[in-house]
Length: 56
Image 1 (tube, one colour):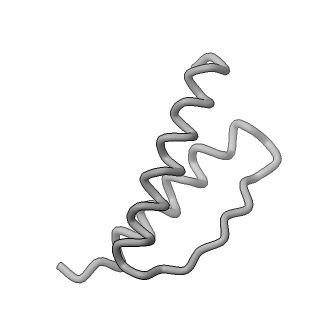
Image 2 (cartoon, one colour):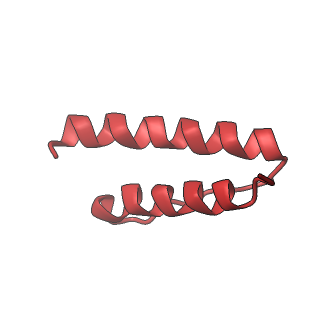
């Protein structure tokens, strides 16, 4: 994934995480990993954690 696509994907994932957290009332402060290659996997993991908190 090129740098521009990675940045766009990261931004969209941050927006998804923010929306999900607001939906369920999860108060979260995200500190992204310094390594750019680790940021998207980290966001995906936090999104999954948040999805798992939703009562279904």
